[in-house]
Image (tube, rainbow, N blue to C red; front, side, top):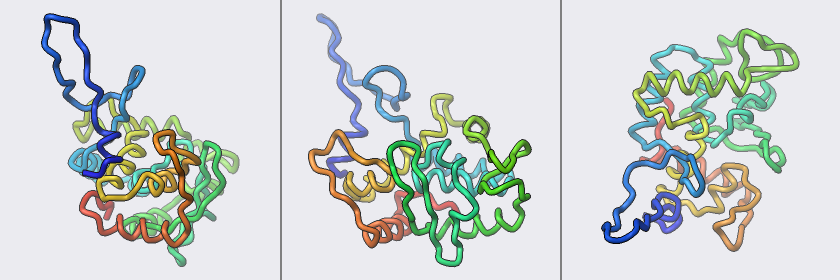
Length: 227
């Protein structure tokens, strides 16, 4: 396992008072409280979540959560996507990050292209936003709150613990990418980070390297396919 991954996934050891024996902390972190580790989904958990989304039959949600996972999108970032950001002909996606980041263009993962095509063919036009809901207008698309609610519904259907949230998808692709062997600087670029506190030197990832990363993740056994 890469050193970077160990640093993320290792739970901190506890220091109980004597005469009790020191016990190792077990179980998956919840993401709550000071120093809590990110709550990500294992490949098995994510596969269960995907099956629940597909079983729901909503083409929008299949495309939505697939993009959120593969690009580590925050709920608000998913709602910021516009129709014009998707170029299926070129296989590209433009993403605007919510925190201190300019828009970047990424290659679309191959397993997401069919899901996006199906969704766009059946999408009801309610404005310029890629993902829309019943209350959408030219000014607003699907809301971040609704994205979070939908995630909880599908997570419950998948039998996942209540501690998971839509942000767990972001943590998941970060961990799964590290499991594939990518360095933190590559993962930072994928997530739209401008810096990483745990790294002394941050190397900017070039567009060719970004393309190579997405294609390698397409083939990775650690990344759950959305097709």
